[in-house]
Amino acid sequence: MSTPDSPAPSDFIRRIVAEDLKNNKHGGRVVTRFPPEPNGYLHIGHAKSMCLNFGIALEFGGKCNLRFDDTNPEREDPEYVQAIQDDIRWLGFGWEGEPCHASDYQEQLYQFALQLIEADKAYVDSLSQEEIRLHRGTLTEPGRVSPYRDRPVEENLDLFRRMRDGEFPDGAHILRAKIDMASPKVIMRDPTLYRIRHAEHYRTGDAWCIYPTYDYAHCLSDYIEGVTHSLCTLEFENNRAVYDWVLDTLGLHPRPEQTEFARLNLNYTVLSKRKLLQLVEEGYVNGWNDPRMPTLSGLRRRGYTSEAIRSFCEQIGVARRDNTVDIAHLEHSIREDLNRRAPRAMAVLRPLKLVIDNYPDTLVEEMEAINNPEDASMGSRKVPFSRELYIEQDDFLEAPPKNYYRLAPGREVRLRYAYLVTCVRAVKDSSGQITEVHCTYDPDTRGGTAPDGRKVRGTIHWVSALHSVAAEVRLYDRLFLHPEPGKEEEGVDFTSHLNPASVEVLTGCRVEPSLADAQPGSRYQFERQGYFCADTEESAPSKPVFNRTVALRDTWAKQEKTAGGS
Image (cartoon, rainbow, N blue to C red; front, top):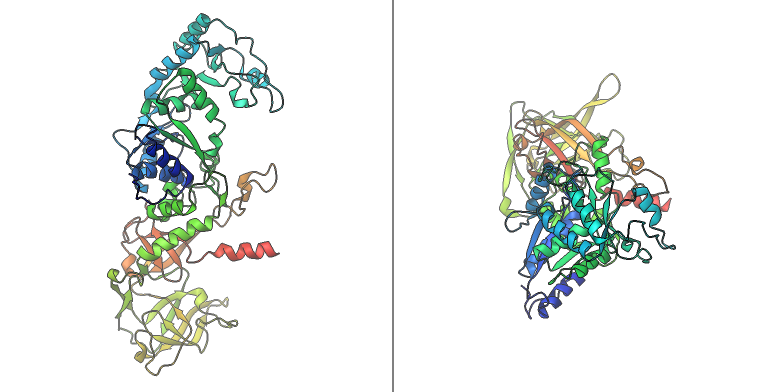
């Protein structure tokens, strides 16, 4: 909990909480909540909200409730409930006791609705949805009163009870708040509180056929749970008027207060659940945990760490105004994290055979390779070296351009951790494709250093042809080519900006033998290639599958700079 000697709060919400505690506003309590709808998987935007809500509870000695906002039975699924809990735990947060559910409060919410009707603050409206829309008015014109607005209280009570009893079909009636159809805030023009839904609920079955709207259920769920600080993103700023009206009209105290903060917007990304669901259902991606998705399960499968995501959320901070964050910041966070923790390994993604003509046919040496130069405690490993190796295809060119320092005819390079070799010839097939490169090695340069002090500018990685293991590698990239998918011009569908090269599957890769039995989820830096993770679903012993988490550098920065200057 904060003390007089604590550092100053880092953002405006933490300052509000600190001031409330100082003034004993909520009796010294701090209770926040994280209220996801169980209608999809959590994404990176939810991570920011989690870090704020759970983080404030931890910092100020309070608690954060996990509450499922399950008031729409037609869209909710237990699969999402489990996935949400898994993601929260993975990110490093927890909650007290069992998760809460808005559906737990159905009877209480219903009783509160009866109180509003009895106070003549709510009424049953029998207009159709289209008629209600036409009556609502516009931003410049007031709405029109429904002909059912002045129904007697007893008639409203009778109709509402019969709605609950299932006498009416979907859409026959709704319960509306009686506020002000001329309000300049359109949301306050008699908003809907309850609607009829004859649908099976995943928790309550068919016990209810009327369900509260978000604006009604959310504020009352906060009150029932004793929430002190209800933290929402800015799109709910207008909804605060209804939030306050419901609590004030019912005279509920002590009552929570809603505060809004800027949601996370990332370029080259969509965070709308509707759009993410469309990507899944229409087959643009392979499920919610596709490594190209911004879902937490997708990022986790791609190799992102919870520490990197929390660090990213901390760095971008909490603001009052919306802005868009460059996805390069997120990619930088995972590079920084994996640079410290990921062991190094050698992997050849597009193999080209290299034969050392003067190396003994049967000799196999073990080269000492550093596991992580950033952390000496990770030690080293032995990598087998033999006469025939694999190197990357683009590490050899017959006619190299200026500033190309890798292998070429007559050129000497360093094989990482091994020897200096000099190219003597290349072998081609009938089509002119290079199939082998032949070199000689200097046996006095073991470890890559020449005793005579001569310098070489190129260092390339390799694996032993005899000992390396076949692997599949998936090179993932950004899912969209446009920084604001679908917003380039009005009417453009966001899927038209999908990146056709968002994944490249390489099946002929070779990796050093230490990776043969890489545990699913284990992360590595493939030297000179990037950071990779053994796939959690398809990688298996002796048949490893690796997903590229992120390249070693931001390859998009140069592209964007070039595009901007063209």
